[in-house]
Amino acid sequence: MAAILLDLDGVLHVSGEPIPGAVEAVSTLRRQGHRLRFVTNNTTHSRAALAGELRRHGLELDHAELQTTAAAAARALAGKRVFALVMGALVDDLDGIELVGDGAEAVLVGGADETDETGRVFSYMNLARAFGELELGAELYCLHKNRWWQTSRGPLLDSGAFVAGLEYAAGVEATVLGKPSPAFFEAAVAALDAEPALTWMVGDDLEVDIAGAQRFGLRTVLVRTGKFRPDALERSTVVPDAVLSSIAFLPEWLDTAAAA
Image 1 (cartoon, rainbow, N blue to C red):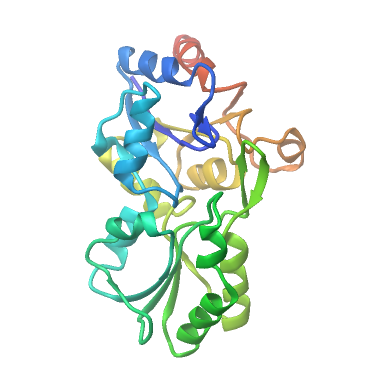
Image 2: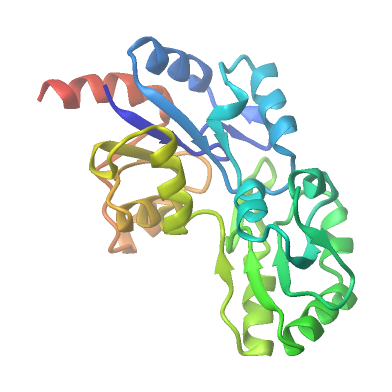
């Protein structure tokens, strides 16, 4: 039986609406004995809220199976003074970090969401304050560096644009804490007590999910939902081990691949 890392946004749901067949596919994977871990760059909900939302849609999920970027940040920045540009829902997940308005040792950039909170968090004044902290010697971290994400109303700009702007202005390079960071994949594989070469990553993002997982030695499945774009796949030098119409087809495909 395989160890499988499952992305959330674009693989299991889009804007909170389950992708057809996703819940049934996860149930089937469990019945088949596969070990699952849910890995997400979602930065708009707390870990508890994310788990609760997935359960409300009928997904079998243990709280401990969900790996988030906020938890990665809490580990990496424990004990540090941090100026954080994150959604309010994440604050409780940043346990052990001292959140400050100035005199920071680190600047942490979270992700955008579909509400007007994004405009408040990433206002010019807040970005200018973050730049000021970097100029004074703070290190730059980000929960992810995604350029955009897929919503029910189409693609929306994500906070990777703000991270890139701060990098350019301050002449620094951000440390990425979520996918495609090798440390994030390493933690996920270790949690399943698995070997990278025997672990599958299932995602909708060629750069963040597929290329990131491949650099850590994982096998990969790209799904044609969420962020998937046929032209991006055709242009890319990244070649997944498989491309499936959606996660609904994963259990059968794994059976076939194992028998081959």
